[in-house]
Amino acid sequence: MRKYRIALLPGDGIGPEITLVAEKLLKAASQKHGFELIITREPFGGEAIEATGSPLPLSTLETCKSSDAVLLAAIGNPKFDTLPREKRPETGLLSLRSELQLFANIRPVKIYPALINASSLKSEIIKNVDLIVVRELTGGIYFGEPKGRIESDDDIRAFNTMTYSKKEIERVTKVAFELAKDRRSKLCSVDKANVLDVSQLWRDEVNSLSNTYQGVEVSHLYVDNAAMQLIRDPSQFDVLLTSNLFGDILSDEAAMLTGSIGMLPSASLGSIGPGLFEPVHGSAPDIANKNMANPIAMVLSAAMMLRIGLKELEAANSIEDAVNKVLTKGFRTGDLMSEGCIQLGCEEMGAHLLESL
Image (cartoon, rainbow, N blue to C red; front, side, top):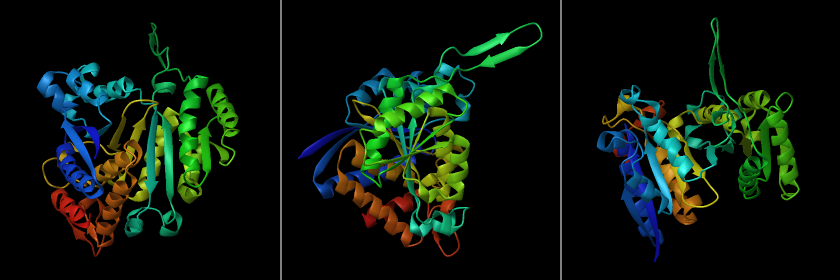
């Protein structure tokens, strides 16, 4: 029997609630499709700070590194905002990405027919949306040096450096091309090459690599136009390739096409080692332990882990089909509610998903 080691990081806020739902579905899917998941829970984020004083304990990191995949729910709580930056939950996430050498963030955005009226956009605009945003995760202006502040007698100046190397662009672009060739063979690269030198290099390297993937149609958009096109005609996109800063903004914009950020999974991948799979949403501490959370993004992150991280495609399909069946029956959590639907709590939604699976 095939066996896989999974590092499970429930984290903070609604994290433990949605983790419980995803874990039940994963166990059921593995039994159904003939493989075994060896799941190890580890403290991470605020939970780990309270237990050990560190958002990423060494034991958690070692478990993640020795696993076949890492499944994370959510981290963060305002009560940790007064800690030094290196002690906060978010720093633990950045450190984990760095230690696992994860450079490509994958965010799929797909419209479920049952939720087409949940979006703030007209149904005819979003009905065929099925795209993936590929965001470079470890370079660009967030990590460039030098950065800081310069103070003088009469002024303060702050600065950051946007920088990318040829190799950094190449590796994330290859991920985007590989995804595109297995989908609709369309890749749109987003940049600001009309004014930024770093974007000119980005565009040059994308064009150069396109010779290796001649079956993939390549286009380019300036980031401001891309933001507009995502609202005007989002179904034109298949795979969107972006730098760190542009991807941070555009992926959140694309998320709202679905009507709720509570529906969206993501993956962070590197060249070697385990990938990190997590919902796009945050820890929502204001609704934690109230049975109000939407577990679907976590469930779809688990399916994404099965599909991309473990190559268990049939199991991934079965979980995604279960989500579609439950939504089609009219079951909703509060963030998805519309007239004529049946509102459920997190636990009850999990029970219906498990039954459909």
